[in-house]
Image (cartoon, helix red, strand yellow):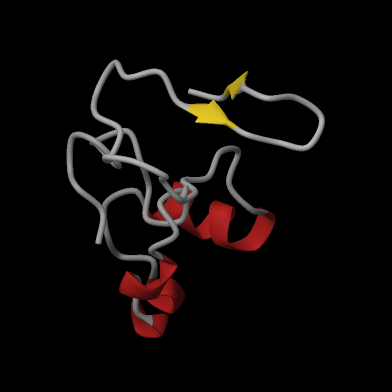
Length: 80
């Protein structure tokens, strides 16, 4: 699950967080909840941003930590 304040905050919608399953089909139909217009649009068109997971080779990254990607093209790329 997402950790509020690290993975998500008040600016993150369920669609952006990969949590679309928490919006019941009935609620999607009635659209009677706060933020419904934004969330329904994102469900239909896709979000402008999306939370993704990463696999760590060490301890979990914390706030303000530099996150590197190790790829075949380079030894280290800063990704966050």
